[in-house]
Length: 192
Image (tube, rainbow, N blue to C red; front, side, top):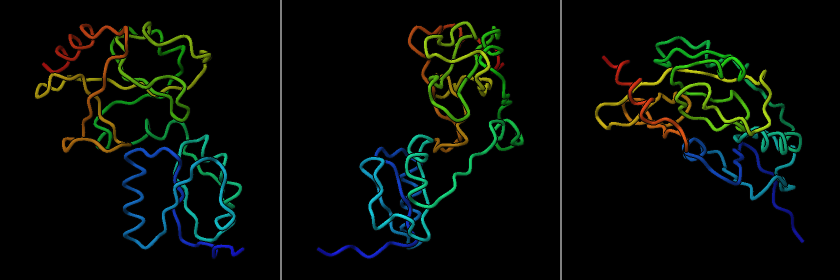
């Protein structure tokens, strides 16, 4: 039985790829890196502790494979997006708590900075935030304003961390049970 030669200069990806992973994979290949997509959290022997490894994936995947790759995970502070200059986000973004966000009575885009337990999306107001995810009131969330795109009629919010349309905006559906009419009315007032 022969063992494959250890790999160096590679990008490891999770089992499920998102748009960012696909873009990173294409870029890595152009730069001569091997791209390895794992089927699960088990790292193949030839990749364990191999030099030149790079990792892209969500927090759970990264935590499961980082030690076997001899990588230390770097995570930005929860407020890194909120601290970016307005020119990069084109939005006022605030780091707050889920408890504080529940008091808001205006439409908003809400997401957790790291974990994805709370569904990221547009909420008509804080009372519409889901309460059945076992999250405490002190859970950190990022909150930003929303606007309406008159070209498409969609309620939209910029997504600086993902691939977006050429104008930098991506449509966000109002969650099931959400007050689409209230969100659209707010966006209409904001656009005037």
